[in-house]
Length: 268
Ligand code: GTP
Ligand code: MG
Image 1 (cartoon, rainbow, N blue to C red):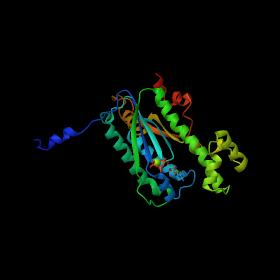
Image 2 (image 1 turned 180 degrees about the horizontal axis):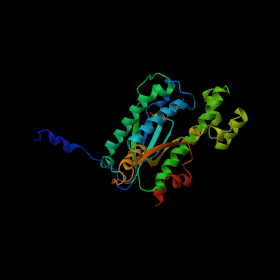
Image 3 (image 1 turned 180 degrees about the vertical axis):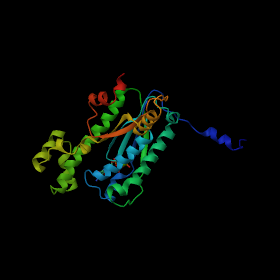
Image 4 (image 1 turned 90 degrees about the vertical axis):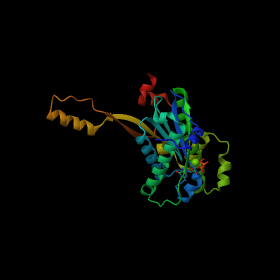
C-alpha cells in the first residue's frame, strides 16, 4: 500500500524496551483510593469484599498473560512479574504497561458490583510503573519490600481503628499514641486493650494476596487425546499440553522456602 505524505510522523515515536534477561515487574496502584474507599464505605482498616475485587482483577490479568509467574497484592496495589525470557510485545514498556493497567481497571469495574453488592459510585483509575530486576536477589527483595509494607501498614491501621472505633479515641489521639512506637508495643496494645492476638488475624490482611502460577495438565485436551486413542490406538499423538493456572495464597514470601518450593526453576 502506498504511504501517505503524513506517515513520516511515525518517526517521532519513541520505543522504550525492557532490558533482555531481566524480570519485568509491573505495579499498579489505585488513584485516590483513600476517597474511593470512604465513598464506598469500605470497612476499616480492611474490607474483604474490596480485596476480593482486586484479587479477581489480578487473576484476570494473570490468566491473560501466562508468562506472569507471581502476583502480589495488598490494599489498592498489585504487582506482577514476568519471566526473564518473556518476549511479550517485544518487551516494549509502554505497550506492556498500558495493556495491563487497562485490563486491570476494566476488570475491577466489571466485577465491583457483583462482588461487593454495592453500586459503583465513581469510575476507578490506576497508575502503573514497570521496573526490570536483573537477578533473583533484587526480585525477592522487591516482593519482600511490598509484603513488609503490607505488614507494617496493617499492624498500624488495626491499632489505629481499634483505638477509634472501640477505644473512643479521636483520630489525633490515636495518631499520637502510636507515633514512633515499635511492633512489640502495637502487638501488646492490641492484646491487652482489645484481646486481639495479631498473629491470629486473617492472613489475607497480614500477608496480602499472592497468585502463584502452577502448571496442570489441560483436562479438555487430555480427554480429547484419550478419546482419539480409544478410537485409533495407533494414532500419532503429541504429549498433552500443560495449562497455567493461578493459585491464591496468603503466605510469607520473604523466606527463601517460598521461592524454592514454588519456583525451583529459578535456582537451576
Ligand atoms: P494515590 O495512590 O497517591 O492516588 O493515593 P491513595 O489515596 O490511593 O492512597 P494510597 O495508595 O497511598 O493508599 C491506599 C489507600 O486506600 C489507603 O490509605 C486506604 O485509605 C485505602 N484502602 C485500601 N484498602 C482499603 C480497605 O480495605 N478498607 C479501607 N477502609 N480503605 C482501604
Ligand atoms: Mg493509591
